[in-house]
Image (tube, rainbow, N blue to C red; front, side, top):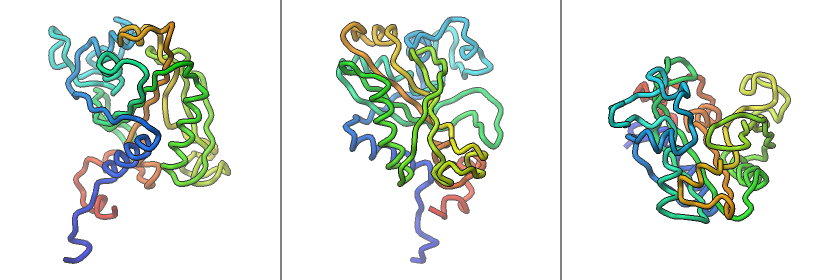
Length: 243
């Protein structure tokens, strides 16, 4: 059989496999959650206010507003069920598809793949977050990268941060990948909010946690130099045959 006639793994499959392997090596359990979620797991348990715009039809695909069923908007919806089932301490990573009702363009899709991590333990802090993610990105991109935190807000963490990595293509000199800035925004993260721990049946006076999330599609675009997210879902074999 000619090489060109053999099957090829999709680039998103490759990244998900890389993410799972790297975090497994770091001692994380791999978790799987449902794509159809409850309003409680997706919003209420994660400290998202009742009047938050993300709950509106403009951002959320509701299957039944009356019964509180929706297509998950983030994999954070798995956090509280996982804590209730496993207790503390824990280290968990989960990847899968999420859905948001938004317009499609080169960098946005109504459905895409995401990965999220959760760590709960004694005296867990942002220092643990930085060390863990430094190891992860070094392994994923195959070279040393720097990490920087920028303050941000997410309802389920406090404090919250946006995470940038030094550009792995130009070593911070400036290129088209980092838009000449030397840095690439890759992730949102933070220290797990005490109310989220409480919803998970974990006492925030005894335990602390960190959580982080990033788009698999975004990582694949960066690693493989793909400039349009829609290509992942086009079914065009000219893309997958390169992998």
